[in-house]
Amino acid sequence: MSTDLFQVTRTVTLKKGEGRSLKAGGLWVYDNEIASVVGGGENGALAAVKDFDGYPMGIGVYNENSTIRVRMLSRRPDTEVNEQFLRDRVRAAWEYRKKTVDTSSCRVIFGEADWLPGIVVDKFSDVLVIQSLSLGTDRFKSLILSALTEAMAEDGVTVRGIYERSDAKVRELEGMERTKGFLTQPFDTRVEITENGVRYEVDVQDGQKTGFFLDQKYNRAAIQKLCKGADVLDCFTHTGSFALNAGIAGATRVLGVDASELAIRQAERNAALNGLSETVHFTVADVFDLLPKLEAEGQRFDVVILDPPAFTKSRTATKQAIKGYREINMRGLKLVKDGGFLATCSCSHFMTPELFTKTIGQAAASVHKRLRQVEYRTQAPDHPILWAADESYYLKFYIFQVCDER
Picture 1 (tube, rainbow, N blue to C red):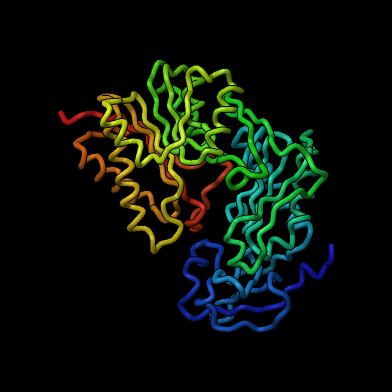
Picture 2: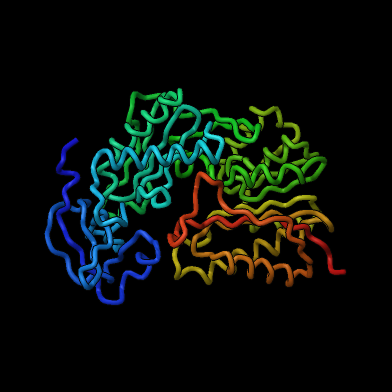
């Protein structure tokens, strides 16, 4: 690999009083925090970061196309970023997963939370899927993948193929084109995995994001104990993951709902794969439209699961998102039998834990339901939460017992 990739071509100096997030442990420097930039070179090249008084703050990748002007690779100013540095980071990410999660399918690299900003790598059985969202670390993509496959091979894990899903719109904010395709010889992109005893067919080519949402792995397992002999409603089911966990746990009847016909067809194939087609059923519908109809029909469920997509991906849209979360939780609560259970979550970083909790409380009060908290969970450990990097903490997951007013 060319040593030019590892040359520090700029020195970025912060304004006085800025860089508070960086100093608290964060990894981003925004354009409006910068007083001066000395040097040049390509966007994505390495840059040294200094405080207003010249105190060294570390080294990162620089991109003038992005409002996140510098993404830090190291907070240690004496760090030499080179091939070995990246290999060590990748190996540390793999070693962490081996200690904390079932690695048969897991997120192996989680961007900033693994100190490899803008890079996500998911492992689905013997296939890797990479999503590169930062120009700086995109330049290191080949080395990162090489280091990862080598680290896995040392543990006897063979990678059959690698697929790139760098087709997210956010790449355009980095001045990058959206792209997807094979990074190895082509292979069947419908990959079968097993999670919590449930079999899935994951579409790494056309499924959402990298093909499957691994972050809910242990939250899906947590609902199993509630579902034996239960009538279960799984809203925003996508490819059926919560519904199938309910089914395999022994639910009497499960209804999964999603607006995407493509996702529902995949969910039905997954149900058949697990021998659950007689118990777990799916329908294509807008959840906001369907729930009032179910209520009007007098239907009630022992367990209702709400796993909506992010209602907001920006701070400015948070107020509207609150209305959406409040409404969907009100609708869901009305469908829970007295003494039944509600599992509800938000995957929006901008919907903070405090705000989400408050919104659920407002929804319960509006429909005169009492909530007994069973547990509160976040994303699986392969999506680690890096303190001071708020963007890494996004998933909030509650399980409540729902009681009528007493």
